Image (cartoon, rainbow, N blue to C red; front, side, top):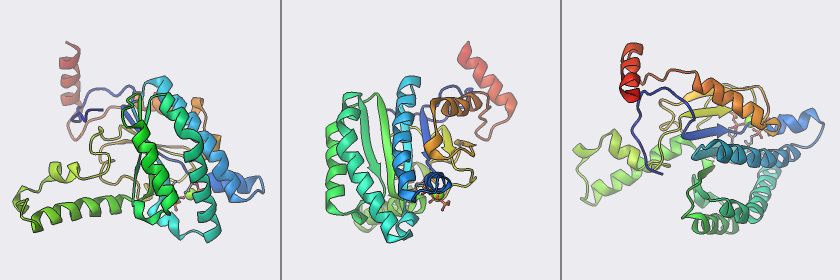
Length: 255
Ligand code: IPE
Ligand code: IPE
Ligand code: MG
């Protein structure tokens, strides 16, 4: 999927949707069930979200599945999440491939056990030529980690004599961030009622439209996702320009 420069045209269907899937634990606790039951229900909602994107012609979906900080949760919850993750990889990849979904993972991969790393690599290999939906799973991911790894890569190039520090600019740094080949997310959705970024795509969300809902992730359905899209379609994205400038650009595009 080609990366396109941001323009101030009126928002319609987002090209790229980024989602913080939050509230699994509370969903289970409200039912007096262990938190892991909520994570299992959350996995079902992932499929609903993928279906929705395919049906609505959204070309890129990035899901926050596990943050750098989530490694600090109780050992049994982390262990259960890893098992769920491995099972999902074993169960879902064939079907995703069949539907033309390209799957990739962003985040600090070294922290996962070898069987999970191998499954991730296999899923990426199997689906690499698909183009219907670019699905990126952020796992062991942190926006700060992402910026640090991009900076480390540039520093290494300078140390090796391949890069002049004066040539480092936003475009070059952006090219080393995760998802560099995709347009930046147009729309961000967070479920679970909290209105924060929690170290998700810090760099990439600079001009993303943010949408929050009290609904817990396992409660997500197509109707709720459509509400987010409808809200998005009504917004004016100005990218730092004035409303009049945006209107003029829009007229140029229409003419
Ligand atoms: C999101 O749900 C999934 C992960 C972070 C792995 P939570 O587990 O954070 O659920 P709440 O926020 O505690 O309800
Ligand atoms: C964000 O949710 C991470 C994921 C959904 C994977 P958290 O539950 O970890 O975020 P905080 O702790 O409420 O900020
Ligand atoms: Mg949470």
